[in-house]
Length: 262
DNA sequence: ATGGCAGGTACGACCTGA
Image 1 (cartoon, helix red, strand yellow):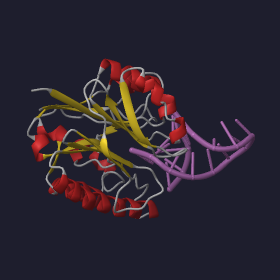
Image 2 (cartoon, rainbow, N blue to C red):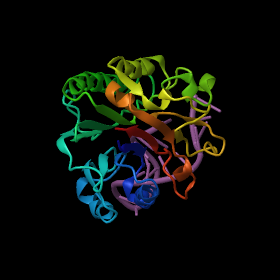
Image 3 (cartoon, protein in one colour):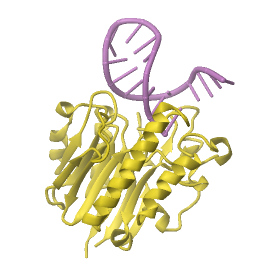
Image 4 (tube, rainbow, N blue to C red):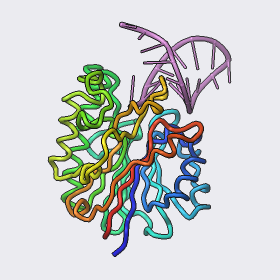
């Protein structure tokens, strides 16, 4: 029996947030960490900084926008195999997906499309992109029964994940259409690890930088760790670490963490 | 209805995010 700790964090620029990530990893030495919104190209990825704290990483970056990485603990994890860049069923210049297999666990890290406004071109992109993700997830599950899909989903699954459901009703991140996309992933047999447990109310993973939203806890829970049944059944804890959101120059997202006892 | 804050680009404002 050993514990596998997996996490996801939208860092909103790895260049700015690298010290945060390094400090957080040393305090919370997870085995696998999915990062989103690197906002840097591959040649600027700070691999050496991770190596010096006994982590390594695989990454798919691009200049200015998007960009994802999987950071893994070299002490506890084997090198990744079957590395995936982007969705097989959606050709995309935006770098939003990276996946790899560690032992028999398939770990997929995604920076899902935001969507901007309901009905916009970007919203249509979100719909099509999620449909591709769902289709690809189905294939992955057939090949790897132990699947973890982590990332910034840009969907608050239910009103309990929203500080003010009335204001956010039918707004981006909260619309029924988006929630149906999220449900479509659950319908494949994935489980929202956070909701495997009774949780206190009003726990969120993102807070707007403006209007003192964090201090007022005006947040949304849009970052998730989804687990296939064989992993969900050995999940022992799932939580959000608000601490880095209180640090100077924070990301607007907090890391989400799940423990598995294998 | 709009901007509000932050990061990137590039050195002007503007784009994007959620």
